[in-house]
Length: 337
Image (cartoon, rainbow, N blue to C red; front, side, top):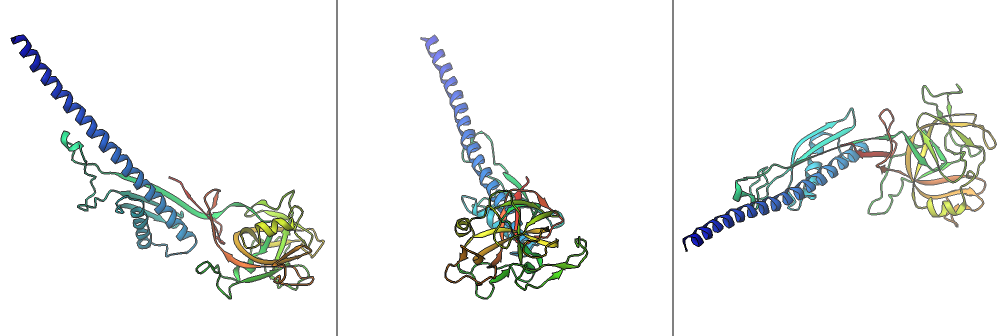
């Protein structure tokens, strides 16, 4: 009987120790899952914060300064937290490098502290965890872009303000009508210093066409000269149905030129110097033949060639940023950390 009693006591001690170990493991698993969820929410908030600040700075949507960036970061950090509360531990807004780095951290809704209190692990001595997440984003003009082969004079872009729709409706009075620069009496501009290849000081106004091998798009790069299409109608590969389905009442990415060489009118072979990239919301056009929208009342008639719309903005997350190029409506915003 004594042996049985001693064995029973040993078993009880073993069960008790095992139970404590099991409870401790359960507590750790429970709280590690909570830490993982907290870390994921903080990372989502940091990512959203730096992307929002970078876009605001790149497009001049809001002041690009520390107080505004901090307020935006706190807002997005909170929006991505389950309890809608998160802290901003650190922020570095570098206007020269065009980068923003943000570190978000736990803020306990119960006491405002920065320690994430354990739910169960306190039974084995843990008092809490500090959880943080860091993200960094960069913004700038794209070095290259896949664009519509319709190229607009830089001075036309500079003559208009970038606009956005109000409640989904584009504001009255901000619509631009740009004419083909050969044969439509468009005004010339001054060629930009350093890019006047032919030395005539002349930058044709209006728009022209770029030559494509096939299709109705091409990839262009800032600082390079691109062959122009000599015709007055859309270049080969651009069908009327493509314009009707993908250009009319759409936002399209377009290149701007800051100098031209050999552009002497319809039939002239020449080239354009790429200055940058923008976004045009197209409201109508008349390129002759079937290229008319709205079909019954295009923005110009007869032998005139024109396109109408609003200079606006667009954001891409892929591509190489050109730190020396001016942002002309099209912006690259991407996470780099």
